[in-house]
Image 1: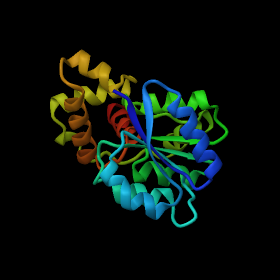
Image 2: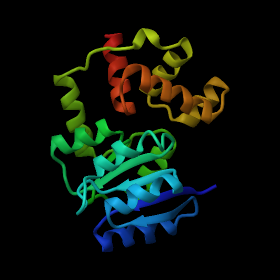
Image 3: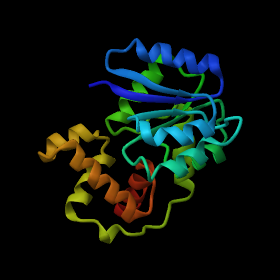
Length: 210
């Protein structure tokens, strides 16, 4: 079964280039293209793709605004920011909104394709420079632990495995449960810890252990 992907990007050449490269892959397919935010906001919930490649600075609105408004309607959809911006505010606003990956447009197409596969399987792909900024930020300011005691033993086990870098499929195999069950547990973990992505959840978990 192919990974279904929607592209939200107002630069038509880049949007079309992404579509062309993605559709060459046997395991993924572009099911929708949007060139402005309002169109994406209106139609994405009905399409409900597996992955959305989202530009952060559209002509009519911010990509983070779209994610914030759609994340609850599309909890199973993974959003990857693909943008020219590398400043800290935009990075963390994207992660806070619920983006699971953040790539700069200078990345190779191979990196973008591998990131789509990675996020689909439970990863949190980032450009190297972005990942370094995220780590530096969390080293300086660790978030307050909230809700950890509310986690069930199974949820704590899954969070431990996520912190070890395991993907959803690997966790499912290890615990002899389905991938959908893993995703349900992860959703409960996010809700109880008051976080919106895996990076924040793992950071809270590591802070608790220390």
